[in-house]
Length: 337
Image (cartoon, rainbow, N blue to C red; front, side):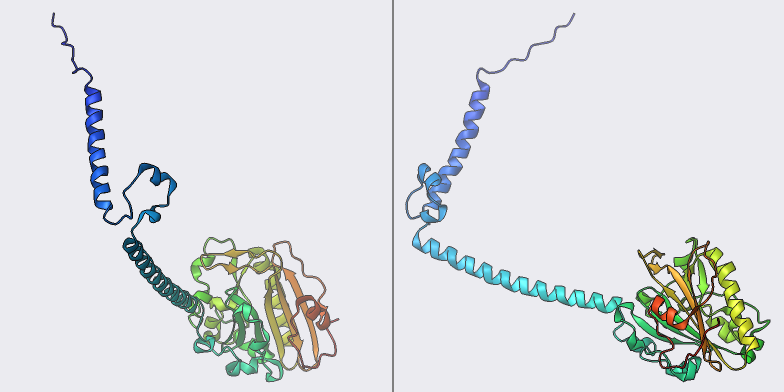
């Protein structure tokens, strides 16, 4: 039977190896000390390494050289810091310019509604400058309505329509297209996309109703997302649809023009949907103004499935409730009551 041969070690081999390693390290230290003494004011002493700062052991020439080197490093560091600061400022400015329009008027006439003033009572449009810049307000004109749009919420704040018997007769029977699209007049960082609404559980709710549009082009324009807000489906298809139909019935019965202001309110915690963070309104409102009779009334309804149509409020109560003096300077002598 074979036997395993025992491995033998040289006596104290570990001590020899340790001594060799120590000797090599000591040699490096000694040679370093010999070379280092050329720039030292006095030879290295082990105790001095503990009691004196290393710089105190340098010769005067070596110390002056070190000070010069430090000054150059500080100067270089200041230059680099200044360059980095300038580059950072430039980058931040570029990012800001990318995420907000340089001049909203370049994309659309944001200062006024010159191209659709006839949609407003007495052709006195809203002044975009009266809306806080925090909303990113833009004025957008369509053939049959005007939109005060918010680049912050990526939805309309207020949409204005002029309804009358002739217009609604042209609208009757016009086929609904359902061809929704993003409004490319709006700078990309300020607009909603179709993908924002997909799978969200919310309807793309018209503010200027599709059924109010007098021709195919106006119908197509009403499906721009600049005319949409995220709306609870039950609210949109039942309660809001009935309210729109009631306003049309009134405009068909009365003589003259009826102006309809439809808008969104954002009360309480902000809720959004989609990649572009489209704001979901807490309430929707509709203000109706009969120009001939100088009467106005309004509804403010929560954007929920359980909302109920209640008695309309008069104009003064509407302004107090919403903060929107939309008929400022116009005669209002009565309400629907």
